[in-house]
Image (cartoon, rainbow, N blue to C red; front, top):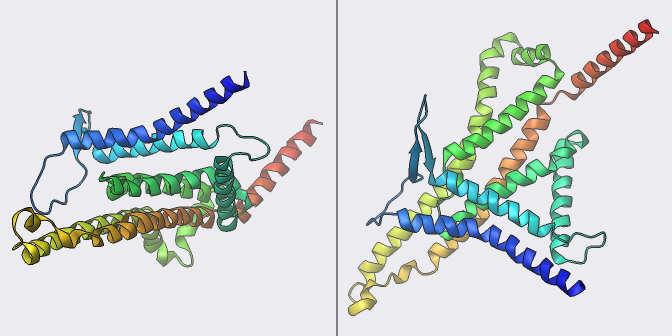
Length: 304
């Protein structure tokens, strides 16, 4: 009986890992089947796979959207894998890793947002995970969803909605009053600053990831041309080998795709935490709660 349970446990683990890898394999196969070979430098946006007719505007299903869903599905199965077989005492290495991720994320949220927002740890972990995995897709030769302003812009709009929601916790009057501080003349600038928050978050993340991809492509192309110029005189197939492309593009990929991608994920998460917690008027919110509680008590006393 115990042996059957162990076999079932291992089979479930394998299925979870396959579920985490399969979305990326699907994206790679789809790219190979739909990609059109081109000569020279080719820097384009996300490939459009098909279009869904809509009343106001057609919905474009692009490479960035498909890859984003692949990242989400992959992270989902990874979470199932890491939480499979949890016990009170951590006997599996994956449980130790999962507990470390949870503890670090909770500590990060508590430090930057305070105890009031401690429930935001899963949301912040999701932002960092999706952003980092999306940028790392470039290592597989896939289009990084973070290189599409529509994807990152959607994240920024979601964050902006949360910022506005918590600002309104202090009351609509207090929220509108904030636009006139410190003096009424600052109203246009304060409104502009409010709108600039999601714009700056989106373009900072998108610009850094896209610029890294563009620089890497340009340098790789330049090294190929220089290699042909320097070693093109070699006989036969040796003259076609891009010797100068060996090594340096890999180093650039380590920086732009791994270090920079993970750094941008961390920065986006930090900006999300700081903007949400910084816009929350906790004093006004607690005053409103006390007023509501006092009114409620008065109604109860009047009925008694």
